[in-house]
Each structure stands twice: as C-alpha cells, then as structure tokens.
Amino acid sequence: MTGARGDAKEVGEYALHVQSAWRIISNDRIVAGSSDLHDQQQANSDYLNLPVRTVEVHHAGSFAIHLEKNFTLEVFPDDSSVDEHWRLLKPYTDHPHLLCNRQPSCEWWTFATLGVLAALFVTAMPLMNRKPSISELSAQSFIDEFHQQYNTGRYSDIYGSADKYMQQRISRQKLEGQLQNVNDRVGIVRQSSCSERRRLSMKATQTFRCVTTFSKAAVVETFEIADEGGALKLREYAIAPTLPN
Picture 1 (tube, helix red, strand yellow):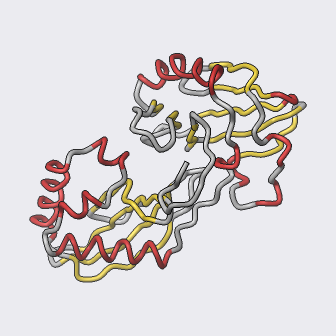
Picture 2 (tube, rainbow, N blue to C red):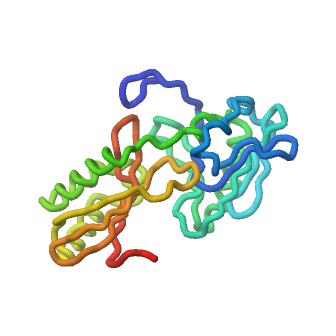
C-alpha cells in the first residue's frame, strides 16, 4: 500500500497498538519488554513476524498471544489513570477501532476481539519496537503554531490539526467551545517554555509539557503529539492552573 508520504508500505490486515506494559518471553526468560524502549541492543529478530498459535485472555484487559517457536507476547495494563491500554485496528482504513481503556468495556472488548487476533492477526513486532521520532524542535514548532492559531481564534484550524483518534472523541464544535472558554479564563498566550516528558512504554505518541504565560494567568499545558508519516498531529491537549506535584 502507499503511505502518507507516498512511499510503499507493507502492513498486515490487522495491527495491535499497545500503550501499556508488555513483554516477550521464551522458555521462562524475558527476551524483550516495554522498558527496553531505549535499549536497542535488546532487540531480537527471532520473534518477529511469527504466526499466532493461541490467545489466552485474562482479566482487566490483559492477555497473552502464544507464537510459534515457543515465544509469547504478554500484555498487562498496569496504570489505572490512562485513557488507552491497547487498540486493535485495520491500518489505513476507516474501519472502527477496538479500544481497551480503563472503562469496564475493556473486559468485554478483550474477550470479543482477541478471537479475531487468534484467527487473523500475524504479529507485527517491528511496530512495537519503533522509537518515537518527534524531536523537541519540531514539537516546539507545532506548539508555536497551535498558540498562534489559538491567539487569533482559529480554533477550527486546531481541530484540523488533530489526529483521527482525537476527532473521534470530540466534535469540532465542542473543542472550539472549550478553547473559547480557556481564552475567556486566561486570555491569550504571551510566552511558553516546553519540554518532553518521560516517554511511556511503547507509546506511539510523545508528551510535551509547557509552562505558559497567558495574559491573565500562568498555567501548565500538556500536548500529546503523534507523528503520522512525518506530519505532526494533536492527540491530546490539557491545561492546568498550577504545576503538578
């Protein structure tokens, strides 16, 4: 298929995006895990692209995918506060995504969809070993553009820069109303200093925190940014009146 930048890509019919903790084990030994994100020496090609043999479902969204050659992928959500643990999707299609989050529906999704995994999913582990590629410089440019759009009331453009996951969660009208409420409370942006927060395990996005001075108050903004084929997209935006502990 053709990717967003016109380059040829080979993708499976299904993809599993994991944002919680995970590990790959073989013969009672951990051969790779989500904490190895920054240690590329831990990479091991032995478990890449192996067919699925069976799927074992556990509680609270956790599961194990048993692969050939005695490898097993274990996924176990370990954070009660995040909005997404894992997601099953058909890449580059408009087919609805199956999402496991902190809601009770996660348990239902696990049982209902992992049968699909067992029958159709061939693991795409290179995607899980992918390092996020958003530099602080490019993120700062993206955030500067966000602030310029915000200051000039171009809220519709901000919605247009959001990725499809964000647009599925919130309507254009609602986001525009929320941004207008922010403007009413704290005014426009005067200056901002941003830095990258600690990357969460295998998260396909990166989070940047900005200490921002508005015309009426100083606040903390949090941007979660996704890289879609070289184009930065807004996944989440939050604002807090004081610095978190």
